[in-house]
Amino acid sequence: MMLAANIVVGLIAALHIYILVLEMFLWTTPRARRAFGTTPEFAEATKVLAANQGLYNGFLAAGLIWGLVLGDAGFGVKVFFLACVAVAGLYGGATASKRIVFIQTLPAVIGLLLLMGR
Image 1 (cartoon, rainbow, N blue to C red):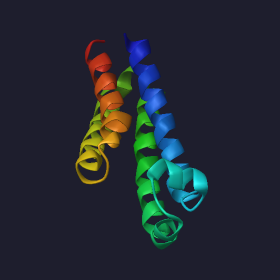
Image 2: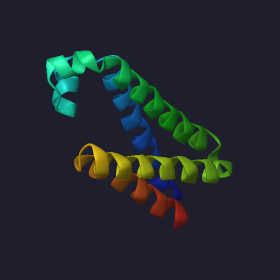
Image 3: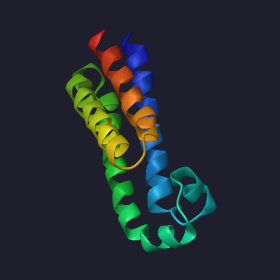
Image 4: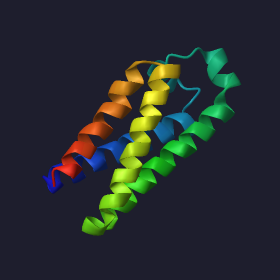
């Protein structure tokens, strides 16, 4: 069960690294605008805000990776950062797009359940 949990944690970390790249470096590109449903004008006007969001996604990824590096001792770290991802997803789902719940919260909850079933 722990192997499955660690795989999910790793995938969620990778997702947040991808989001970091989209928000910090590719925000005004067609790829990022498609992913986030923004117009060129909106993307240009909000690129500094998006870069800040991207940095926070990087912190989430770093925390999850830290938990993986710690191995069994990283259980609490993984739980904490998965809970952060889940809460961020709930907030994003309530304020930005319902889709975020399925992209962030659901995988984080699955990871938490797998960790708890260790």
